[in-house]
Image (tube, rainbow, N blue to C red):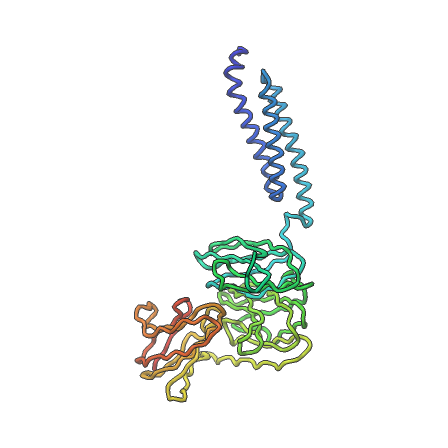
Length: 425
C-alpha cells in the first residue's frame, strides 16, 4: 500500500474506528468493576479512565504520523490506568464490605402503606445508629412516602424526607442516626397518615432486647400470655401459619382496645415477621389480632401493677359475635358491628323482619374511614341503607329501616372487600 494512500485514506478511517473499539472494550470489561463498587467510587474510577483515554488519544492524534506502535501505546496507557484504578476500586470494595458505604447501614424496620394509612404507626429503633426503612406502598396508583420530623407539629425542615413512590411498590430508605427521643413521621401527600419513631438507647429495630416467639394457627394464638421486661425494647417473632389468612399482634392497655400501645403489621400466612416492641412500663396489658378479636391474651410486663384484663370469650363454632340481636329498651332491635384491621368482626348479622333496628358501628381503625351500607345483593346496585362515613377511632349509631324477610348484602363503601351477609327473618 502506498504511504500517501495509507496516510490520507486508510488511517483517517481506521484511527477513529480503532479508538472506538478500544474504548468499547475497556468500558465493557471495566463496567464489571464499576457495578461492584459504591456509587462514589465508581464515579471517580470512571472519570480517571475517561481522562486517561482523552489525554492519550490527544497525544497520539497530535503526531504527524500515526503508526501502529502509537495505537499500541494508546491501548497500553489506557489499560495501565484502568488496572491501577481498578485495583484502587477493588481495595475500596474490600474496605466497604467491612461496614463502609457499600453496606446497608444498621437495622431494618418495615412500614406498610395500605388504605391511606401506615402500619404500624409506632416503631422503635436504636438511638445513635443509622437504620433502613423498607417502605411497602400497597395502595395501587397512589403516591406515598415517609418524612421524619423532630417535632409533633411537623414544622420546619424534615430530618429525613423519603422519595415518593407510587404503589404497589417497595423502596428502601437509608435514615441517618437519631438522638434518643420521639420523632413523628408522616406522608407528605396525605398528612393524615402519621406515626412515631422512638429512638432508644441500646434497643430497637436491630433486634436488641429479648425475643419472644408467638405463632398463629387455626385462627388461634399458641399462647395466651406474653411476658416482656419492663422499660426495655423487645422483639416478638411472629409466625402466621394460617395459609391465606391475615393476622397480626397488637398490644393495648386493656380489652376495650381504646388505647393502642403497639399495632403490628398485618401479614398473610404462611409468613413470618418480627415486631419491634417499644419499652413498656410495668403492668399487665392486652394483646389481640386486629382481624380476629377472639385471638387474644395478656401481656405481662415485669414489675407488676395493674389489673389483668379479662380475655374476650370466643364465639362457639358457627356463631358470630353479633349473631344474636338483642332488644333495646324501646323495644327495637340492636346489634353491634366493629371494623378493625380493614375488616369487619363478623361476616353476618341477623335482623328481625319488619322492625326498625339500631346498629352500633365501632370503627377502631385510627385515621381510616369506614361505614356500613346495605344493598339487595353483591352487585350493590340497589342500596337499601347507606350509613354515614366515620373516621376511626369513633363510634356511631345507625337506624336501619324495617326490612322484608330475606338475605341481603352489607359492606363498607370505601373498602368493598369488607362485606358480609344480613339475614332478615
